[in-house]
Length: 152
Image (tube, rainbow, N blue to C red):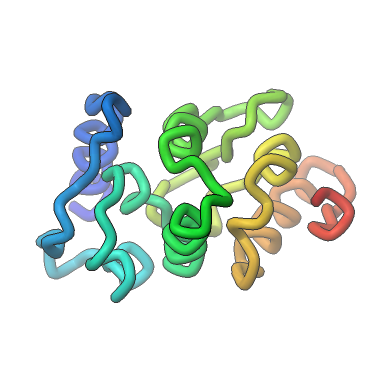
Protein backbone atom coordinates (compact mmCIF):
# COMPACT_ATOMS: atom_id res chain seq x y z
CA UNK A 1 0.00 0.00 0.00
CA UNK A 2 2.80 2.41 0.89
CA UNK A 3 4.50 1.91 -2.45
CA UNK A 4 1.28 2.48 -4.38
CA UNK A 5 0.50 5.67 -2.44
CA UNK A 6 3.99 7.05 -3.03
CA UNK A 7 3.85 6.21 -6.73
CA UNK A 8 0.55 8.08 -6.97
CA UNK A 9 2.13 11.09 -5.25
CA UNK A 10 5.11 10.97 -7.61
CA UNK A 11 2.83 10.73 -10.64
CA UNK A 12 0.76 13.67 -9.45
CA UNK A 13 3.83 15.83 -8.89
CA UNK A 14 5.50 14.74 -12.13
CA UNK A 15 2.35 15.72 -14.00
CA UNK A 16 2.50 19.23 -12.55
CA UNK A 17 4.83 21.38 -14.61
CA UNK A 18 7.22 23.84 -13.02
CA UNK A 19 5.79 27.01 -14.48
CA UNK A 20 5.29 30.54 -13.34
CA UNK A 21 6.96 29.77 -10.02
CA UNK A 22 4.17 27.38 -8.96
CA UNK A 23 4.30 26.84 -5.21
CA UNK A 24 2.33 24.97 -2.63
CA UNK A 25 0.46 26.99 -0.09
CA UNK A 26 2.12 26.96 3.30
CA UNK A 27 -0.72 24.89 4.78
CA UNK A 28 0.47 21.51 6.05
CA UNK A 29 0.15 18.59 3.70
CA UNK A 30 -2.14 15.83 4.92
CA UNK A 31 -0.22 12.59 4.83
CA UNK A 32 -1.57 9.10 5.36
CA UNK A 33 -0.80 7.53 8.74
CA UNK A 34 1.66 5.08 7.16
CA UNK A 35 3.86 7.79 5.70
CA UNK A 36 7.54 7.18 6.50
CA UNK A 37 8.98 9.63 9.03
CA UNK A 38 11.50 10.91 6.49
CA UNK A 39 8.68 12.16 4.20
CA UNK A 40 6.82 14.02 6.94
CA UNK A 41 7.16 17.79 6.48
CA UNK A 42 9.74 19.56 8.62
CA UNK A 43 8.78 22.60 10.70
CA UNK A 44 10.44 24.87 8.12
CA UNK A 45 8.79 23.05 5.23
CA UNK A 46 5.36 23.73 6.74
CA UNK A 47 6.00 27.48 6.67
CA UNK A 48 7.68 27.97 3.28
CA UNK A 49 5.81 28.13 -0.02
CA UNK A 50 7.51 25.70 -2.38
CA UNK A 51 7.10 23.39 -5.34
CA UNK A 52 5.52 20.03 -4.43
CA UNK A 53 8.42 18.01 -5.86
CA UNK A 54 10.55 19.16 -2.92
CA UNK A 55 8.18 17.30 -0.57
CA UNK A 56 9.02 13.98 -2.17
CA UNK A 57 12.76 14.09 -1.66
CA UNK A 58 13.35 11.55 1.13
CA UNK A 59 15.85 13.50 3.27
CA UNK A 60 14.31 16.13 5.58
CA UNK A 61 17.57 18.01 6.22
CA UNK A 62 18.15 18.40 2.49
CA UNK A 63 14.70 19.93 2.07
CA UNK A 64 15.49 22.43 4.85
CA UNK A 65 18.89 23.15 3.25
CA UNK A 66 17.04 24.00 0.04
CA UNK A 67 14.60 26.36 1.75
CA UNK A 68 17.43 28.14 3.56
CA UNK A 69 19.51 28.30 0.37
CA UNK A 70 16.64 29.74 -1.67
CA UNK A 71 16.04 32.38 1.01
CA UNK A 72 19.74 33.28 0.89
CA UNK A 73 19.74 33.45 -2.93
CA UNK A 74 22.06 30.43 -3.30
CA UNK A 75 19.70 28.08 -5.12
CA UNK A 76 17.06 28.26 -7.83
CA UNK A 77 14.25 26.03 -6.62
CA UNK A 78 12.67 25.67 -10.06
CA UNK A 79 15.96 24.53 -11.55
CA UNK A 80 16.40 21.97 -8.77
CA UNK A 81 12.85 20.69 -9.27
CA UNK A 82 13.56 20.10 -12.94
CA UNK A 83 16.72 18.16 -12.03
CA UNK A 84 14.94 16.15 -9.31
CA UNK A 85 12.08 15.18 -11.59
CA UNK A 86 14.53 14.15 -14.31
CA UNK A 87 15.32 11.01 -12.30
CA UNK A 88 17.36 8.55 -14.28
CA UNK A 89 17.79 4.84 -13.75
CA UNK A 90 21.27 4.63 -15.25
CA UNK A 91 24.47 5.54 -13.46
CA UNK A 92 26.21 6.55 -16.70
CA UNK A 93 24.24 9.73 -17.32
CA UNK A 94 25.86 13.17 -17.23
CA UNK A 95 22.60 14.87 -16.21
CA UNK A 96 22.54 16.55 -12.76
CA UNK A 97 19.85 14.23 -11.41
CA UNK A 98 19.72 11.58 -8.72
CA UNK A 99 19.22 7.93 -9.65
CA UNK A 100 16.37 5.98 -8.11
CA UNK A 101 17.35 2.36 -7.61
CA UNK A 102 14.34 1.06 -5.68
CA UNK A 103 11.49 2.45 -3.62
CA UNK A 104 11.83 6.21 -4.02
CA UNK A 105 10.64 7.03 -0.49
CA UNK A 106 13.71 5.27 0.95
CA UNK A 107 16.87 7.42 0.73
CA UNK A 108 18.98 4.24 0.70
CA UNK A 109 17.66 3.56 -2.79
CA UNK A 110 18.89 6.88 -4.16
CA UNK A 111 22.25 7.61 -5.68
CA UNK A 112 23.44 11.14 -6.32
CA UNK A 113 25.21 11.38 -9.65
CA UNK A 114 28.56 13.16 -9.85
CA UNK A 115 26.96 15.94 -11.97
CA UNK A 116 24.19 16.28 -9.36
CA UNK A 117 26.73 16.56 -6.54
CA UNK A 118 28.79 19.10 -8.47
CA UNK A 119 25.75 21.25 -9.12
CA UNK A 120 23.76 20.71 -5.91
CA UNK A 121 26.31 19.31 -3.44
CA UNK A 122 25.73 22.12 -0.94
CA UNK A 123 22.23 20.79 -0.46
CA UNK A 124 23.52 17.67 1.24
CA UNK A 125 25.49 19.46 3.95
CA UNK A 126 24.55 17.63 7.13
CA UNK A 127 23.03 14.76 5.12
CA UNK A 128 25.66 12.01 5.30
CA UNK A 129 23.07 9.39 4.38
CA UNK A 130 23.03 10.66 0.79
CA UNK A 131 26.75 10.15 0.32
CA UNK A 132 26.62 6.81 2.17
CA UNK A 133 23.83 5.53 -0.08
CA UNK A 134 25.64 6.85 -3.17
CA UNK A 135 28.86 5.10 -2.20
CA UNK A 136 27.01 1.88 -1.40
CA UNK A 137 25.67 1.73 -4.97
CA UNK A 138 28.99 2.80 -6.48
CA UNK A 139 30.82 0.03 -4.61
CA UNK A 140 28.27 -2.55 -5.81
CA UNK A 141 29.30 -1.60 -9.36
CA UNK A 142 33.00 -1.77 -8.49
CA UNK A 143 33.44 2.03 -8.59
CA UNK A 144 35.41 4.11 -6.11
CA UNK A 145 33.72 5.91 -3.25
CA UNK A 146 33.11 9.62 -3.67
CA UNK A 147 34.39 12.26 -1.28
CA UNK A 148 32.08 15.24 -1.26
CA UNK A 149 34.77 17.84 -0.53
CA UNK A 150 36.57 16.82 -3.73
CA UNK A 151 33.46 17.39 -5.85
CA UNK A 152 32.49 20.84 -4.57
